[in-house]
Image (cartoon, rainbow, N blue to C red; front, side, top):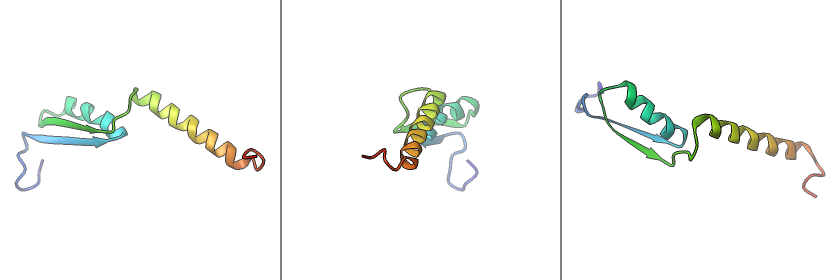
Length: 71
């Protein structure tokens, strides 16, 4: 909003993935935001997606530590 040539009353917030889920929250607390663009936003809530990602990473890590698991 402070850059030259930017209308401070018409800021567009663009978020990708988890940033897409946060973009509406930013718009909710900042009156300068005129629009929100969500790219590849999650299909669930932030906490649901975070837990899902952590579970997937734990499963991948467990497979990596099990040398016979791939067989």
